[in-house]
Image 1 (cartoon, rainbow, N blue to C red):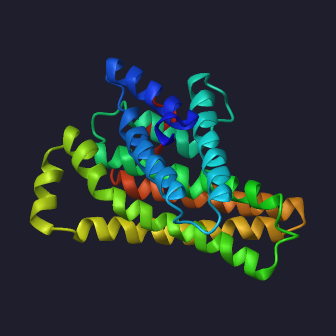
Image 2 (image 1 turned 45 degrees about the horizontal axis):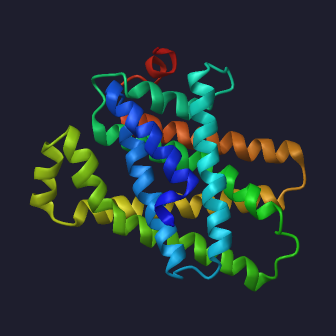
Length: 239
């Protein structure tokens, strides 16, 4: 059953604990849980060409979030910078719930997904036919449809809870903000595919490090854009 999937169970346990502690890390994680649940339902209903592959990718993807969370909580120096910013931001009263959510989405898509996608594809990339690679790409893009279907519920159930003014804005502008968010994330995910396949097609380790350095820079630049006037360095140092 979808509801009993280990990834969802672990997410719910964290959310329940953070509810008691009023820990705003639950803002992104609740959004992520809703997205993951809907991906699993889409797998069950046969919406992907290769549901087993999508399930492997989803589990690898989630593992990167949990590893970043553990590293942050243990104050490991190698905690990804973009996650350190996202996790620290929940403690800053000047950061609203929408920013908290999008900071998490930025870190997880623009940084984690590059790693997860390249790791899962690496096991088969050399043997995949051109059509096989296209199947992977099409399933990667089908997730965008799941995201679009989930955005409105996330805004109502998560963002509206912490910042009700966003719900008022939603009623005024209709679905425009959902479309903008979906298009933005779709663009990010298209870029992620390019970065992941660049890693797979690059045999030189130094060049691969250069690609990941660029990936990290992009995610940090986007975190800066999301935060606006809030100084990024204060969130790298904030405890």
